[in-house]
Amino acid sequence: MIVGVVVIAGCQLYFGILQHDAAHGTLFKNRWCNKALVNWLCVRSIWNELRKYRPYYLNHHAKTSTVDDPDLCLVAGLPTTRRSLMCKCLRDLSGVTGLKFLVGRLLMDARVLQWSLTSTIRRLAQEGRRWWDYPGLS
Image 1 (cartoon, helix red, strand yellow):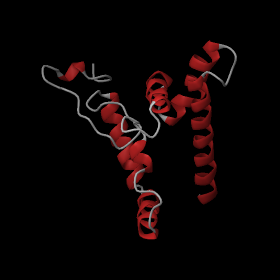
Image 2 (cartoon, helix red, strand yellow):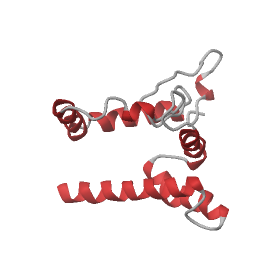
Image 3 (cartoon, helix red, strand yellow):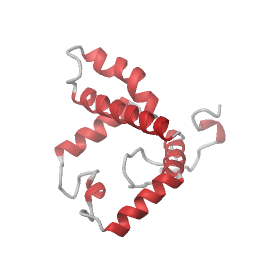
Image 4 (spheres, one colour):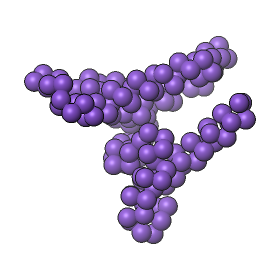
């Protein structure tokens, strides 16, 4: 089982790297391949969408290490302490991180939360929405 988890995690990382290169438009010379092919063969398998990831990621590149960098919270507090690293590992191994990912992605797909790769959580206005306005429920 442990070997399977390591193999699957490696594949997910690989798909994330391909997503990154496609977001830059550098994976293939053909624009369609960078968008559609990578989106369906790689990005969707890690529960992502290139059309959402690309603007977010390019915004990070445009504002790297400034207060407007959307990824700044990922490096805040680094280097970390041994205790903090142990807590992060325990959250990952216990499944808490995966559960948070699952709930977060469901809420982003339902347009309850703004789409983000980081821990930045912004609720979207729900006034006037009916149950059938939520994707996948109609």
